[in-house]
Image (cartoon, rainbow, N blue to C red; front, side, top):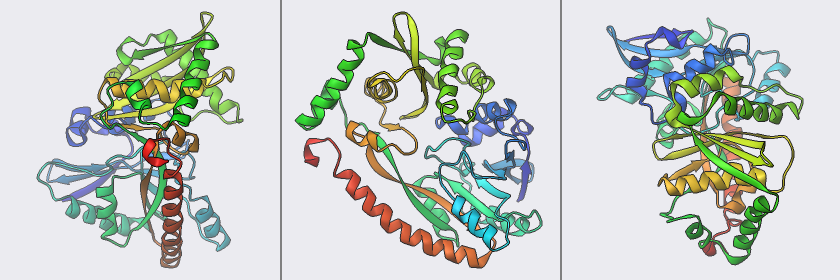
Length: 378
């Protein structure tokens, strides 16, 4: 068994990568990761040096794991800035670190992929042996994995790796026939509120249309990008992603894209960009020129919910944060991340911290669940 790291995903053919990972989870596709690199959104200059981990049996690729050499913690959505600060206070360097994650994407999904019939636990043990052996020579402070599946979190937990819990809000399809059927599951007060929010859209003269990836025009993509970058520029930050990235995925994986455009008086006023894979819908990017009443809720949630119900998708993953999602039927769920540090003292401290934090997360999930709008939540 041989383990190697590559600095460019195009060092491995698309077919070889996708054969191992599959393409249902859109963010792990060779096409998606290639677009991040080719557009320079992910690079050494942006603090995301690709170092994807490949495992070979002789000359055959049998496993892979996306990985990056990070020189900061931005674009991760699992916050370890305080850990980095503590390192500095003790005269230690927290960066660079190795990170297994999808850049700028807080969506749960598989992170370690093995060929059918290959022992995943054995592969992971081999990868961790490689990481342990090479961290110090490479001046790496540790390895982190963000938003893995529960199965993988349990696999990681069987080693000395610390598992950290978080909370996100996701919608689950309980066999709803249509959006009205979904609303009928709400208590009367919350149902009236949601109906009123949707009515605000028509009263403002706003209409929305859903555009499958294969039908998105270059002009529509340009319009979306102007909205998307405004979301960041309003806060004084440049966007993580550029137009070149969106153009590439629109060309290479259109079947997993959905663009929602909002119009008023024949003028575009907002847009939401989502991805679809397997039984899941991933709400990802949004922007608008002006703050119209309830437009964010309509474009980012209600349109997506209608799409999920119509296409019998089972899960709507809306990404990080957003307690406002609870009132719209997005349930609090546990997320996981895995952390291994070379420094034994800090490893012990972080294990203690995450154990205490887990209790707070459990309490938070319980409190959030009590706020759900469903009849049986009253």
